[in-house]
Image (cartoon, rainbow, N blue to C red; front, side, top):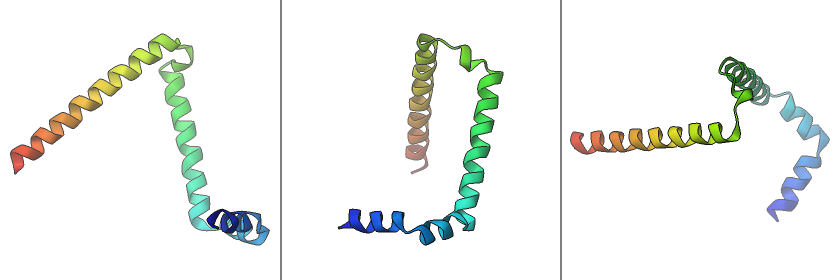
Length: 82
């Protein structure tokens, strides 16, 4: 039932046009494009395009490990505050 309603709404050209012209949709599109270009610039500066899959995997593993450490530290800080 929900699928039929969504299909109807997606195929309603006037509704799609009004949504596309709305401020929230335009702003979301602006932010998405802005973040894309910022990410691309950072990747170029860090030379991530030249990165091998193995190096990328190591970098992601290190990132995950750091995130886990930070989460655990935050949990410990919350426990200490209680």
